[in-house]
Length: 453
Image (cartoon, rainbow, N blue to C red; front, side, top):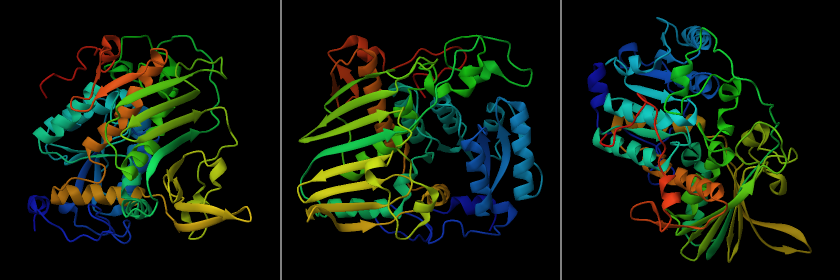
């Protein structure tokens, strides 16, 4: 079987715990795939998350990295050496401009781990170049470009998996099944939390970029600006590149909650907040509360970034078969209130538990299931969908709809807490021209997504 025949297969035997779930019993067990049959990947953005993703795909044994792309040439060269050591064979090519990798017909798929403002332009261009895409969350910087990414994936028949790994976790499929079977009863309230301790950073003067750093490429579609080291190190705290922690981290919980309770577009969105505990250089809020109104159901998002006693689920709890987070101080929990009990869900592992009425003021757990960090399963689902051409667990359409929640909330926040009315058929904000204009950003030439993708 040659390489193209390998990718032309339309079906693969899969193991799953629920409809739409395609994982192996051990998603890290694939080994020794012949070199000619391996999926050739270009990793775009390797400072942090891209490094982890790259090694994760290499460890599978059926993927190889052929390009390492980053605006920081020193980091790209260092990562390329490490990837080469891990996978053997010829070292990956190093490029500061990832478009050169898109021009190479030998590249099958790209893995995007850039700052948020590059997610959608790179996804659209990769689809147009005939590449499948694994793109980190959130899907995009604006609602308009998120829809363009969906259009490009469909038009060019590309697999686009968003890095919301919770949709590939067996324990989350079990939680969804529990809810869908009506065991939690009627649900009218879902609370989503994103709470942590985040250190401030001081303002820094503009300066000249290092000679090994392509500042123009980093800035990309964002407004023209001199180089500033804070933009590089803290991009998620500036509106020009991201939308704060609701979209940088909280979108994981928003996506999982939306999927579990089965909702799509809200009818209204209201959000309040600000920088109440900081005098640093951050632009985005450290305190934020959003309310999303659906039919007979409210979802809230509550964020604090000055609460170091709120803790993400530890690796030990993630890997345990018996331990669960201490829910009152779980930084990234979801609470789903039904008429028959309340379900606490942990993201990225931690599992879920359903509590019913206490006995002698002691907790009573009616149902529970542990869960590990589903990163290997999410990669497995992406690779299998490249081969089968089936939609992945975290398809671009779902990633877009979840990202919209954070984008609507930020628009309301930035307009002083105005209540937004949403048209679910068009995704548009109605009867508010100023808010509607904020659904699309202005692009700096030549880093532009065309109206017709």
